Image (cartoon, rainbow, N blue to C red; front, side, top):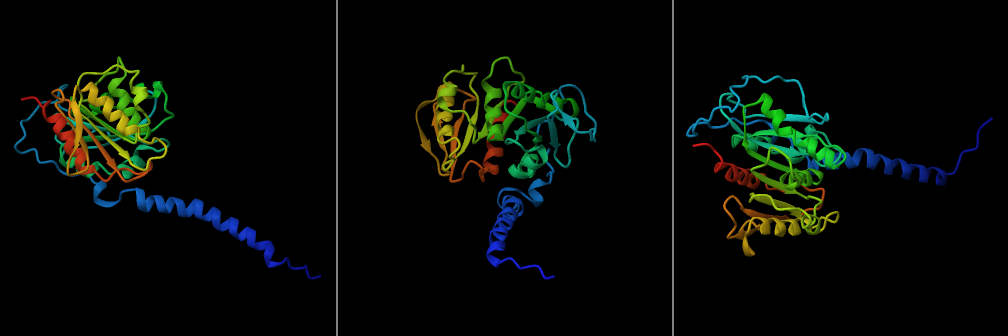
Length: 296
């Protein structure tokens, strides 16, 4: 016996649901991969030109030429991905750029999202990408162990430590600079899309003058205006004078700041999800901030 056929109107809603789900589970990840992740050479470690640089010995003695490939983790188990210059010299102390991930992603995806590897290693940095955990003060304090964990395996000068990160990672970069009783202290911070506003910072005590470059999207609806508020707080902590001036690159820069207190706010046209297209500027700022701490 032939079964009665259902009218096409019955299948239309099912088709719409299937197409919608397919778009969410296939189209959205594909769109994010194309528009928000880095691919190719930017993920490849670059050689660093050691010529002309005064050799600085590793503070705790030479490290292995080929470090142990086993995954590094913080005491709390957060994974760390390390990228060194292609011609890494274990007898020389290197500056360290620690990159804290946005919420919910691991170090490998964080590397693709921010794409700092090639630019930073070409400038002589060792780069450590830390994974994410739910944001608590305990997690923030656990992430303070990233730099010592990397320095245990690689030749690192912890006096030339720079923190950066996006969203939760930006918040962590900032918190590790002003929370008390946390070591090591960074030589500079470069937070992006951080969820700390001016009224939160007003309850904190200023640290010693610190180079700060804050990045924030003009269309960030999750933390609207937070970056600009934070920049003004850091400018006060760095004893800057007057209103900031806008430079050709669009960044606001304060003048009259204390030594080692360069303060910059760099807005960009993106949303909260967008990492700013400023990797050259980020690495240049990190180099300036660590140059004064290079041993003679």
